[in-house]
Image (cartoon, rainbow, N blue to C red; front, side):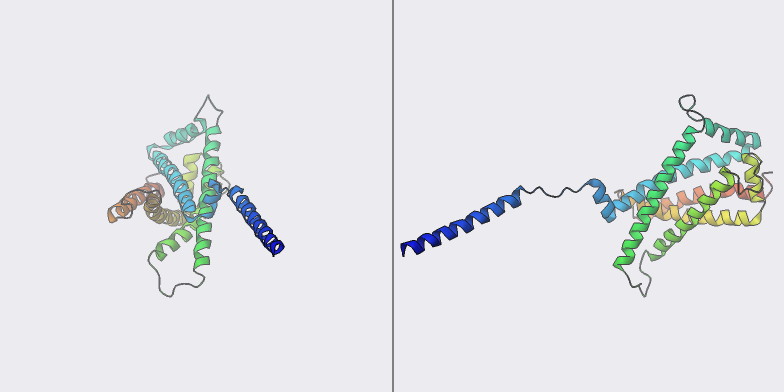
Length: 254
């Protein structure tokens, strides 16, 4: 009887020891570290933040670019001098065109990140909703407009670089900056394509601006007043861009 009690006591003591070892091993195992980059990559809000920040960066460039385009109304010499000045920004600290290439690199990274975030969010949306809604849900029209408008804008950016930056797609590639712009908008289908692209830009800014503000935590960003501000900003930028082709079409710029 005594030996049985001893064996039973030894058995239970051994089990208690194993349990304590297992508990200590569990407590001593460090938790898996989640990096901020990993969180950003996986989370919906992280991708929305990427879209918002890169979108605002590109919007700032668009505003400056639009303002620079309007210098064409001061004449060919003024506009060509402005285009040359852009190539010399930062001299003598940096060499000629270095600033332009830095700017292009930053914008390219922003564009790629913007497209990545948009595509990731679209895939997540389709995965969560494999069967399309029978009735259009609220916000569906805006989402579709952003997607297809983004495709139009991407195609326009590629053409715009080939046309006015590189000159390979321009009707008068040997002309200066002013001459290339005027040569473009003397052709009706180029003007039409430009107007369509600017329409896509207007819709993209109008929806994207208030959406970015809401993502970044701006108070009352979803109110009617704030949406109206976004529409006004988008309209002003679009009109500023369209003044140039219409100036050529109506003979103001020759």
